[in-house]
Length: 391
Ligand SMILES: [Zn+2]
Image (tube, rainbow, N blue to C red; front, side, top):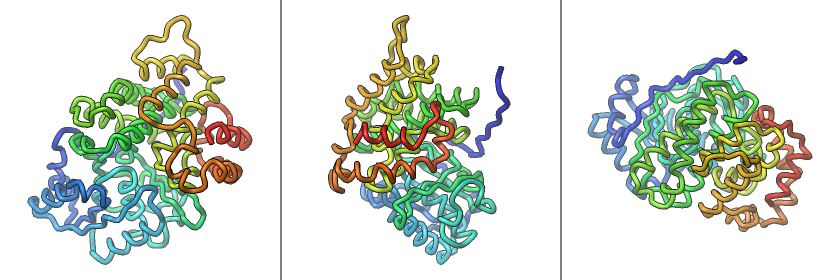
């Protein structure tokens, strides 16, 4: 029997090569007279920010800029950008980038309108009302943040990634222009691509999966599984770029409706303590957590195997084959099997420091709502054992 469920896609979504050109139309329709462009220095350097500036100027739109967003963005960045937003008298947010600028824009929308620090709004349903118009333009495939209700911000005082969740911070417009992901470095394409695949897979197998989230997750896995290697191998491959962009958004729509699982719960503390990029932290954890969850495996493990390998799961299929296929995908994409081999961990004390922090990271991981929907019930001891396997 199908359990009761509901779903919502609140965004006006626009997909297509060159879709960026529609920005002025969207801003005018939303009544935004001065928008704050939120992005990062890398995107400024490679010309993406200039492209956006030109489109806004040609559309006769006024804008201010905040380009100092970094990976794993902090509460201080939100504060600084929020103050600028108020001082510049903006009434709309335009995030251009990966998950970091998009999450910062959501958080800035909150503090600019309702005051205080973003930490005051941690958790579900704490944001008192809708933020100003928010347009998200992803430049990676990706976090799916353009269609989710979450902002994840690092609290540097606690070495903790806090999440603010609620429909009030959901973007109003999502503009998916595959042209923008075609200049990404291979390592970024790999880490972000696996992250998107993990969004689809965790949403697909968790205990809150419903027919709608599963349909979106399957569409995402089909697109990403068939194209991730080709895209990382050559970002100029337009067909692969379109598939990855769309797959990433579909995966975002899936998990915006039913959350994720242990991989995301456990990756956030690693990023908070070691500044490991989100996608890399997830990817390293992925094969071992799939092994941990295999005891609950059903036909969905076989489906994942088929999407990731392009092969049929025959009579001899066993769930371990899915875990092995995911480990092989990491290897093909140049993602290490252990955190000791990840640059940011190496630079911050290596395996010894990682081991020392396992108890604290396990406590932080258990605070995530994602643990509660993981297919296998997970204890703090389980989390510690899993971290030890990938140290
Ligand atoms: Zn993710």
